[in-house]
Image 1 (cartoon, rainbow, N blue to C red):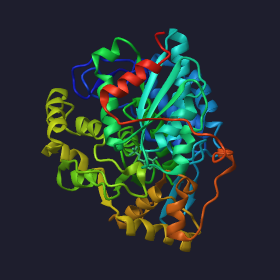
Image 2 (image 1 turned 30 degrees about the vertical axis):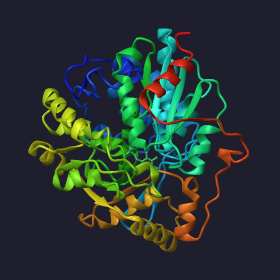
Image 3 (image 1 turned 60 degrees about the vertical axis):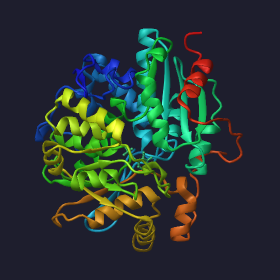
Image 4 (image 1 turned 120 degrees about the vertical axis):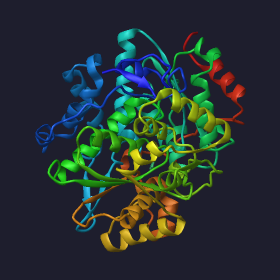
Length: 466
Ligand SMILES: *Cc1c(COP(=O)(O)O)cnc(C)c1O
């Protein structure tokens, strides 16, 4: 399996190289050269298998020669053995047609653990084999940072610099990052928004001055391996609800478009996905793009669902590439124009390509709070604000009533205790696995977010190359 850049001008890479690379050298994102696929009988044969086994079967198609099936199976067993639930990603039924897919049983209470626990093991394995070191740089709207730090703290060969927008993430999210004491972990609080942090990180990957000094790696969902690991739970949940004989729809609380893009990949591989509902909060660039082709970034408005407070969704580029005829040169022009003007129209091919599988729903604060209350009142389920936005969208979307709808429960409600308590009157308890989070000392550096200052901090503090 080879990977190509969405902007057409970077070299093709293997899975191992793609995992250790951030952005492609032409500023694009790596994507498989073609989609592997399963027959209906191959999908049916996965029914009832353990999560780690299905994970290895689904992902091995993308890994090529970089890992044998047995090596991959060993790593999925190790990564998913760390989850607090034996099913890893269990389904909970809400009513006759709605389910929640609980993605928050990992160490840091959000779905990002599912991919990052495995990615940490890939880094360690590949770097040891090559005798290399990697400096990870990332920007977080809250959950990526904690999941990535947990996955790499204290590991050989890697160090991590994580930027978060100061004051715009929950106290649990911040403490899960800043209380980790490991010499290879560096937290930076910047004055701007998540989008500002993400723009700086993207620039680092194409900055020749930095490239000469450090081998940079990505933990954001620009890293293909993250999306790949997320494809798996679309398979495991659809299998439980009758796939491949019965189509299933998914409603996905969306920010950077990584999680829902993994659903699109599952569909390309032959999983019968009836619809993918892109659920956004009032930061609704994706809703506008999918409903009328208008991809124009406004200001980010902070909400109670901070992991969705995003205006520029990196992974949307992968969809535009795949739906728009895989023309890297044309997409490079389109994206460069967007980077200047912060606005673009989708082409007709992109709109038509996306409309078959995707639909979108926007939820405001009232809809989110109402859905949290309703889930508690009618089903006894305490859900987090992100999940509530997904569940609201699942109820709004127009689908044939015989299609089951799975809402991705992307975070544990205790991660957003204040918002949950405001909406439901119940304060969810932190699970025991987070330990004495509020007793531990915090460590982070405050920076303005100015690009040169950030680069200077990273090059000064990186161990790699010394
Ligand atoms: C990251 C995150 C999202 C958004 O996922 P994307 O892959 O960025 O679209 C939604 N909910 C929670 C809780 C998250 O942590």
